[in-house]
Structures are given as C-alpha cells and as structure tokens.
Length: 441
Image 1: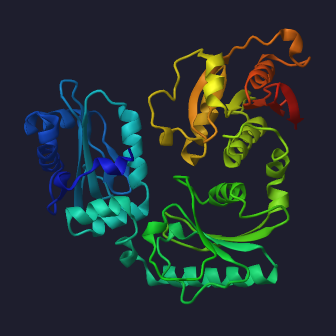
Image 2 (image 1 turned 90 degrees about the vertical axis):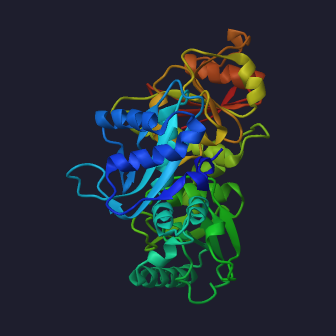
Image 3 (image 1 turned 120 degrees about the vertical axis):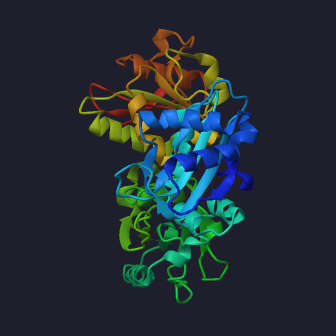
C-alpha cells in the first residue's frame, strides 16, 4: 500500500497558531489513541522521550515525531497542519508547517519514516497540504498533489515556463527533431500553455501523475506516465528517455527536445537536445540479445546503466564487481540460496524496483556484498547477496571466467534468464545468455 493511503480524515487536524511543540504532540497523540489503544498521555510521553534523544525535524517545514511502543496492539499515523508555522526546535530559524506523528510496534521504522519523508519531499505535496481548508482536502492533496498548490505559483514562474516551452517548440522545428517531450511535474500545472501545442513535431506530455493536470485539450500527441519516483533534475531526462525508448515511442536515428524543470524551485526552465543514437547506443545493441519473455527492455537497460556506472566509478574510490540475474524468476530462484540476510526481504514490490532512482545508491552499496542481485522481469529486486548454484558441469563453462562470470554462465544455461556481470579487476561488463557470454565491453 502507498504510504498516502495510511492517512485518514479522522487523524488529520489543523494546528492553532503558535502551538507549543509539546502541546502539538499531545494533540496528535489523542488522534492516534483509538487505533493504538493506549492512553494519549502515555503515547505523548513515549514520543517526547524519543524526541529528547534527537530532533525529528527533517527539513522543508516537516517534522516526523515518532515512538516505538512494543506493547501497543496496533500502529497509527496522525497529521497536523500549521498554516502559519510553528517553532519545532528551540532557536531554529525554519518554521514547521507539517507534523506527522507515528506510533508503531513491530514495523521497520526506518523504511516507514523514509517513505513518509519521501512523500513530503515533493514541494507540490507540501504546498497542497498547507493550502488545504479541510481534512478531506488534505487527503486529496496527498493523493493528487498540485491541485491546490497552483495558486501559490509566482506569475514569473508561469512566464518563464511559457517562454521556455515556446523556445523548445521552435528549436524542435529548426532541428527537425522527432518529438518534444514536455515534463511539467516540476511546475505542477499546464497554465503556462496559452495555446494548443504544435502538431509538428508532436509534443508528448511526460508525467508521474496525469491526474494533477486539467482536462483542457492542449493537442498533445500522447500522455506518457512514468513509473519512477523521486526523479531529480540531474536524471529526469536520462531515465525518462530510457523508459520511452522501451515503449517504442522513439526509435534509432531520432533526435528529441526535452523541456523540464526543478520541483524544488517549482520551475520549468530547461531545454535539452538529445541524439538518441549517440546517447543510447547500448540500448539498441541489447535488442539483439536473447532474453526471457518477461524481461522488460527498460529493466534490462536500467541494469546496464547501473552496471556501467559501477564499472566506471567503482564504489567509494575502490573497484566494484557484482552480478545481476534478470528475468525468469520462478526458475532462477530454484537455483539460489542466501549467503547473507536478504536486505530486500519484507518490502513491498513497489519499494524494491530497480527502476526507482531512489534505490540507485542502495543497489550500488549492496553491490559490495558477495553474491548476485536476483531481479524479476518487471524490475523487482527480490534479493541481494545471493549464491547461484546449478548442476552444470564445470567443463561446460566457458574457459577463463572467474566465479562471478561462471555463475552468470551456469544460471543462464539452466534458465532463460539474462545475467549481467561487472568485473572488479578489469572493469568490464559481460552479458550472458543461454550459458554463453554474448557481449562484453
């Protein structure tokens, strides 16, 4: 379940101006009491003891006070909204506008707190929540950020966005580009478009959530929804183009214009020209490789991206080697066992997908663990630090391969999976299919 689904209107309240931190904790403790089943004061005392150890202010006007109460029969979340802001920590210059109180028993609190912090790291979510008038509007804002935040946009931001889009359309025409890809999520509105977009070249609306935009017919060739969360300005174009390529919207030989911005700054102010052949040559090379039917092209390409970065950069200045086994999961898992505790065990599938940019550093960090990443065709990382064992005779393994590459050869010999191995010593990447190394660079 998405974390925003954990909130409910009966556990959302608007906080009085200049409310003290302690009083805020008590008020929110009363909201969670029916679910937690303990006296509000007892809940508040536990939260205050945790707060005394280290502040739970996480920045951007958001605080996440919490406490683990092992004897509590359940867990709950309450949300407080302070329109004027309150002082969470003594002497702090920043005001706190959103307070989420969490009480839990047997939960992975790090993952839970991370999910909530990630939700409120989106400025559209924060501004929509603060602009809400009722608990029902707060709940709607959590699910459809931007609906109420549009009113807070500076007129200058809309003017810049409109001018940027017009320049992009003109540049696309001058360069005979295949398409214009418009990424307005940094702004959260299409109000900057004063007319229908050009039909030549076609303009595609690229978004994480199409529902936040109005239903006016702007003439888009299509609306493409991205599966990624947490895209930053630095990776929005690369990840989006990779996904769009896998959907067949773009082809080899195309050039495209991308228009995007910065969600933190609430802007749409950047234009990038991309030559698909030059920037995504590996993507087209991969198409000739035999692979399991369930392995999505975008997953395959994303793993190659991460493997390439590991090969080039290593990890913390040291060479890094690892193995990714992709697709045909049900058969692959029969030939594996864990070397260490699986760091991905117990998480929902949507929180463990290789396509999620938020997980990139996590995957790179776990690459230092001996063993393989086992990933299903839809991108879900089922395990890391996994030992691959098969009954393929050693004589059938290509000569000159180390243990990691031998494992890649054997697992692809007995399943239809594809394996991607990064060599720690040579910094080269090898792709295995049908028991053979079919590509190396």
